[in-house]
Amino acid sequence: DAGITQSPRYKITETGRQVTLMCHQTWSHSYMFWYRQDLGHGLRLIYYSAAADITDKGEVPDGYVVSRSKTENFPLTLESATRSQTSVYFCASWTVGGGELFFGEGSRLTVL
Amino acid sequence: GQNIDQPTEMTATEGAIVQINCTYQTSGFNGLFWYQQHAGEAPTFLSYNVLDGLEEKGRFSSFLSRSKGYSYLLLKELQMKDSASYLCAVRDPTGGFKTIFGAGTRLFVKA
Image 1: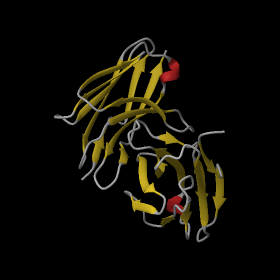
Image 2 (image 1 turned 120 degrees about the horizontal axis):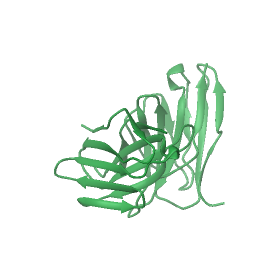
Image 3 (image 1 turned 60 degrees about the vertical axis):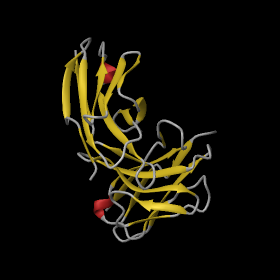
Image 4 (image 1 turned 180 degrees about the vertical axis):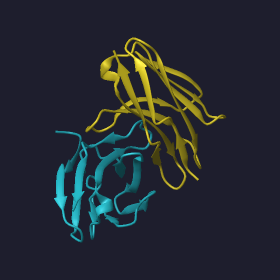
């Protein structure tokens, strides 16, 4: 099915472990984004990518790593998870000249 | 710097009209968006303003004044299902097209 999908939808991990959240879109949108959402902060941009092999930092990039070897995939890695990274993570995509962002369903991450 | 402000919470009565304000200061501007988000769900797109003025879409309208850095979302004939968070967002093309969000306004619709 066309769209933007995230996996896993729910993840519980421990402090210090590496976690990768996956994002896949089927529209060939050039831009992809990772946001985190916490109470009182709304959606905060972590990283974004304008095209394959082009990534840039957003508002809150510390502790996260991204890559984009293919247009359709944009994984987000927490190299050593901390409790402060407990959050809901949303992936989104957009194409230049288009209107709104298209969001995935979100990944709820709990770091114990 | 980047700053988008909107009220934290609002309460309104079923059948009434509510206006949610948003002010913004960003490096650049390429459009203002409103999204609706129900608890536990992803944001869904409501409206998009790139030029000054009012955009109407059914029970929802959105207004933009670029010179004032100001927008509002107007919801008419409120229904209980409109209880949700409403997110104001600005697309900033500076250094790459980023969409920056405000913290959101939680709207409670009471009977």
